[in-house]
Image (cartoon, rainbow, N blue to C red):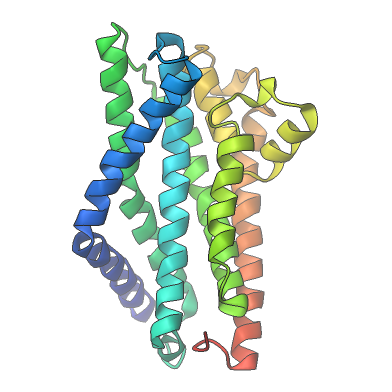
Length: 265
């Protein structure tokens, strides 16, 4: 019961922050879709080309989600450190796992409005061009893989900020790397083999984006994905990233606790 209450409290706190910052969310729900349209215009040399709208949309939705989810979890930790609240939570009998899991769930929910705004904008642009956004239940598997892998990445970054504090630039730089080399805008199959290999190995959204494009654009099934490393890696990669995130977070958390620097910024 203690764990459940702490978990619910963290989720509730995250959602209250989302509601309190509704103006920021509204701005993001406008700017991210505009950014998506600008990217398509740039790639299409000034035209919203029909053959670019859907492939770029799938990558942009994933990129928007990872940007929002990771940043919300990261800044929640950094804000608690700066205000001295985080150290107080470790003085309670509540397991830190409840706090971590609650923040992750709240961040996932908070990331959805902006990602859905990008999706709605893309669907509207495609409909204006006379097309439609295909859907099959199979696409839920790569979407779930993206969400799980992103949580693992967030754990790694949050663990780092417990020890090293001022690492804000890392979160922004990581999102820039995903945008350029993560297969979000240009398929990994069109990139150099070394970059494609590293992206499929460590970028949480890369296998999911490839799978969604194979399913929605190529009409392939989950068990016969022609690009990437197949269904097995799509399922295993996010679990490995999350497991790595859990281990690193726990070690960095214990390191900060031993140093007594949880509340120091």
